[in-house]
Amino acid sequence: MVCINKHNELLTTINSFLNLRTNWDSYNAEVISFDAIKTAHRVLQFLDESGYIFNEFETHVFPMRDGGIQFEFDNNNESSELEINPLGELKFIRYDKEGNMLNTTNLAVNKLTELSHLLEETDHA
Image (tube, rainbow, N blue to C red; front, side, top):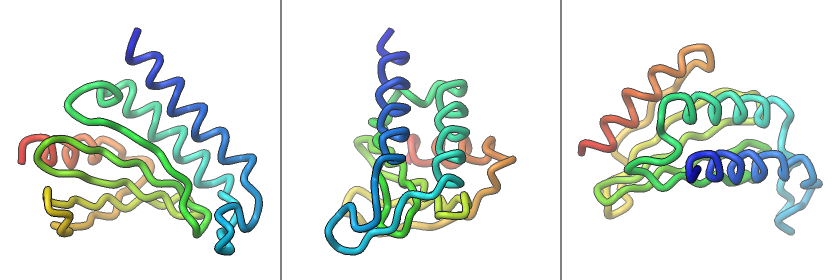
């Protein structure tokens, strides 16, 4: 039941980005693109089906100023982000517990299984 609630919470948050208008942050942020929202839906579905919605990670989702969307995955050892740019393209970024960037990886939307491997690396760091 907790997984369903977290999935619905993240889905509601992503869908709420459709209501954001230009300058939503009062610093000239762009409208969140439909491509970013569509990709975020695909990522959320993949995370849910793969069991990552409720596990070692605390998962959050945020709008980005450039019109993209960011997923954050936090655990005790490291944190990581999955950035979805306005074109729906993906970049995975890993950080150590001090916040230093460890690496970045570009991902293809049609190969989200790579995301599993990256999250596993973060989880077992």
